[in-house]
Image (cartoon, rainbow, N blue to C red; front, side):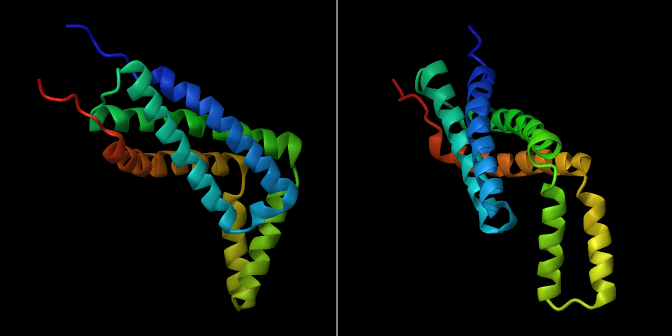
Length: 171
């Protein structure tokens, strides 16, 4: 019995395409200052979900002949999420080291302003900002990018697999 094709090519193809879309969105968000607003994160979730759906559809329709099990769809989505997360780390490093070296400081400043607006005391503010600074390094941010991709990738892959699975008709 012949082994079905793996989701590797579909996942990799759409990770590059959606990774580019995500990088362009990141540049727009940075240049406009939107990256400092909470709503901009939801666009990132949407981009991730779009990529997962496209990778699963490509795998199902072009590589599996139109039928896909929940497990196959889920694995295609998760594999996409891994590639997407790795490309996200690369994009992050490009942004922080070459394109927007002031980005981390701007995020810290916006965070401090939000905490002040919440009415934190001076000692609470100092403690919160010390903790925030510890995690606002390129290495920790890379961990968060990978974690974001894996966690939400698994959740979105499950949902997409539920809707996109298709079994062959019984003969």
